[in-house]
Picture 1 (cartoon, one colour):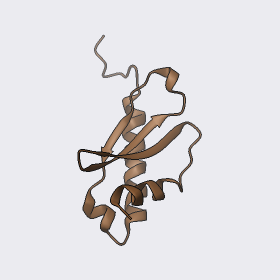
Picture 2 (picture 1 turned 135 degrees about the vertical axis):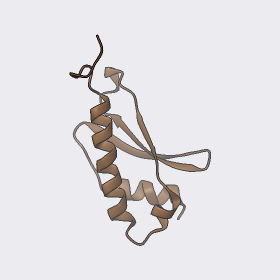
Picture 3 (picture 1 turned 135 degrees about the horizontal axis):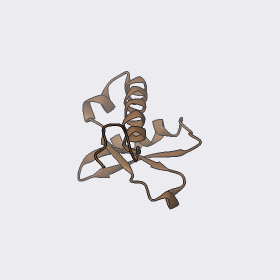
Length: 88
């Protein structure tokens, strides 16, 4: 099984009401891909590299879960249109 297939297989264990998860090979780097199910909103797609050492680790499933949750946090925060720190 390739690294991409391993990540894709693990991601099939996750289903979210608002988001889709996938993986891709981008010039030899495996990337986690997070995007809204409703693409009509025009929001960006989130890409995050998955390190080969993490894919090969015996605890990959847990490592990917933590990484996915961290990425979800970052992605949701990036969707803010305005915050108290925004410059008008």
